[in-house]
Length: 76
Image (tube, rainbow, N blue to C red; front, side, top):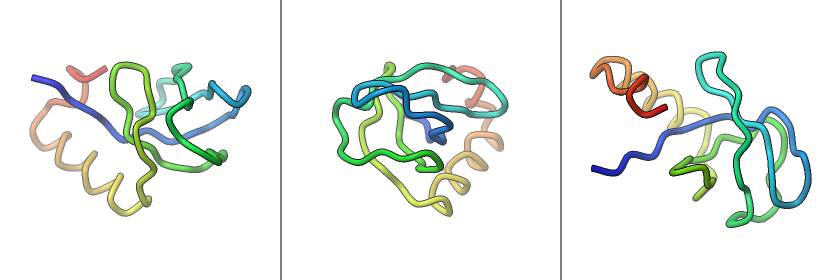
């Protein structure tokens, strides 16, 4: 099973890389597949790549569902 998870961009390193955060954990990710990524944006992360931008409400709803189903920790 493949799982993508919402993360928030905390720092843009360069045009290809950013630091994303979820639940206090920070990780360097690739933003090569997206245009115009900014600090504060929410993105869907899969195997280290940001796949698409999503709005904050959708990100938080998704994370709540993960929490309810105890899959968030397994996804990291």
